[in-house]
Length: 307
Image 1 (cartoon, rainbow, N blue to C red):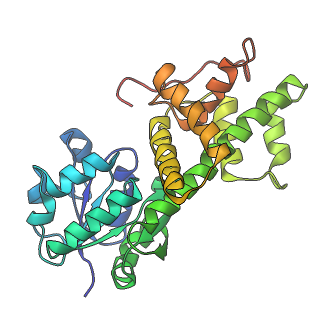
Image 2 (cartoon, helix red, strand yellow; image 1 turned 120 degrees about the vertical axis):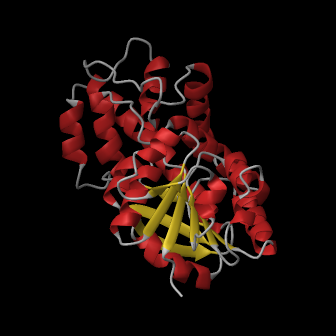
Image 3 (cartoon, rainbow, N blue to C red; image 1 turned 60 degrees about the horizontal axis):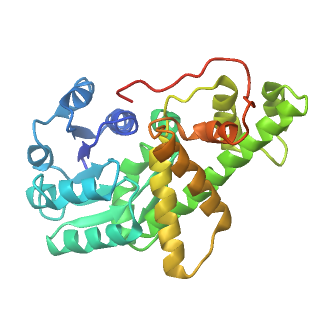
């Protein structure tokens, strides 16, 4: 039995293009968002529900794409109560980035309610969501992943990485790599400029060598353009790094590069009030600790009030 009726809850920067791609793949899509206007933007391809319980009433699968663990927990089991409102045996696919321990708790509670659950966080940012090229890391039962795979393939490249919670652990590993690499790219760009290189030309020169990465490509360009309008808000990067270090502590690990990156993002979000800036704005922290140094001469493109 396939999954035909898909409900997506959370139509923000990522959820909106994800819903469009699911609809484009031929699935029947229903959407709900706390700010209804964001969901209404999908009225041409999806049914816009007036409340979350209505949204899931006929769902074969329910995708959540929201900011953090408390919001997922509220949607599942709080006043929204979508787990109890969904049909028996419905498959809940949480594509939010949350703590692995919470994902495991959710899977157990969902199972007790007679429904199913996989955690399937993503990487690739807004660009990946629009282009349906997201890396999707899924934890849960193999048979549930197999049933969800056609839906997930409409959004990107899904991989089953292990048991419940493993998808979230994989996402944290991804975020550690992303954060540390953003820091390395920012340092390299500023170093090159101060040493007499054109940073735009530097990025072109490095692409194709050992330093090649999506971070150098996409975020290196953001840095040279000083574009901080978020594809990936840095406050969410900070949340993921905190979660990664929590898992590391539980495992008895010390991760010094991840700790240093967390400290920088904490300063940006909490002390410099830049939580809604794109995480490439790590460069702004680097500039702040190097007074008088600034990459490029262009103006900063900062997020709007509603970013």
